[in-house]
Amino acid sequence: MNFGKYAYELQKKEKLQKKKQHVIVLKEIRLHPNTDTHDFEFKLRHALNFLDEGNKVKVAVIFKGRELAYKEVGENLLKKFIEGIGENGKIEQDIKFEGRAMSAIIAPVKIKK
Image (cartoon, rainbow, N blue to C red; front, side, top):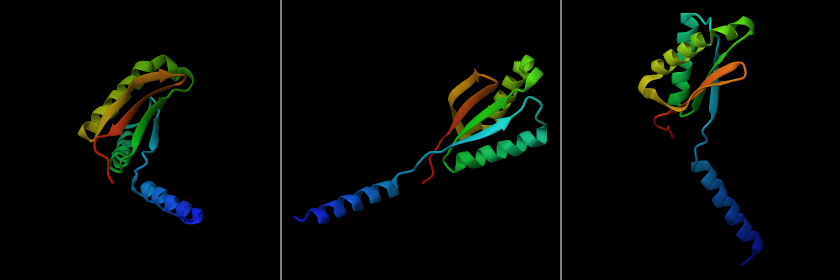
């Protein structure tokens, strides 16, 4: 068998396999402790759209300056966000505080092809 023909066949098989696989992307939504209700709902709708597309969503509450003293406000905001997601997603990584950000990762329930 000709090596060039063999290499071409392998290349075609790899390309076909890549075509069939679905890459999951991590989208990030950033909030602040003093985010207003309309902005919150707007970002929640975006998160629901990301989950419907089959992407994971990282929700982060970013603290600036004196906001660090009110960590419970950020935690309540994240819990409210997770409740808003409801049945559309499941928590992959629970609420975690790292540096000046508190975050959680939500995965889609079903993956869209």
